[in-house]
Amino acid sequence: MHDTGRCVAKRQARPCKAHKSNGDHCGAYAVNGALVCSVHGGRIPAVKEAARGRLMEAQAAKELARFSAAPPVRDPFSALLKLAGEAVAWKGFCEDRVQALDSLRYTSTMLLEQARTEVGVYERAIRLCLEVNTAVAKLDCESKLSRISDETARKLVEAMNRVARRLKFTPDMRGALWQAYADELRAVGLTDQKKPA
Image (cartoon, rainbow, N blue to C red):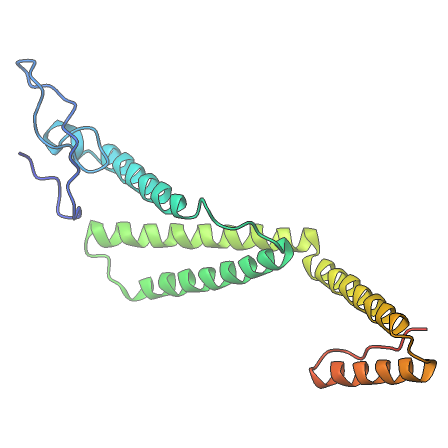
């Protein structure tokens, strides 16, 4: 058996696809994510990079499967605004990581590779922020949410007017109802609600 490397915690049960010079299968385990063992090319940088990519894709597919039964988004505008906030927070986290790299001395190839990876993640975080915030700006989410709130308020006013008519409120009683409603809206911190005509 061949060593698959120190960075892999769990060995895959996939045999090496290479053949020995006598034509027999190698028999060793392939490097995690790769199709061959370390003797048959598993240590080559391009093979290691492809293996890392396969492992990341497998992990992403596993994680994505957990969300396949996620409930549908009922309020896409609010969800997009929340995503924009998360993207900005993620960018800030990545920026802090990149700034911390200044204090490192790149004494090994591994540290240099880690620095490149963190800078790459930061660059992707910047692109994500740009894409999400561009979508928010294009869709004008805040004004759409405001319009939705205005529409909800109109429906509430209409419902209250119907209740007042159904209960045969006098004009004085309707006035008292709308005054109490306006007072309660102010009490909970919402904007003033004007009495409808």
